[in-house]
Length: 68
Image (tube, rainbow, N blue to C red):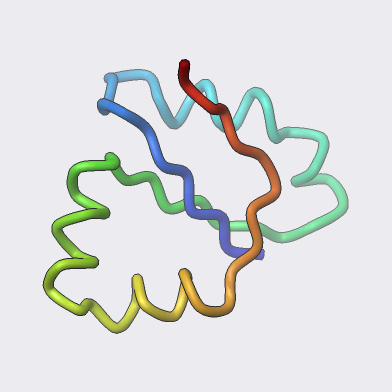
């Protein structure tokens, strides 16, 4: 399972936090995270990046944090 994780900004310990939270999933599923900032994602969308286009077209949102 490929996971696209979009963050507002990158922090030094992002991957450690992700692996901690998703450890139980890793016992049942093989997964690979792809961590990207919102800004970089928007840049890639504006460049018509095929990878990002595929994600938008075929991907499923499994969790979203809405900001107020």
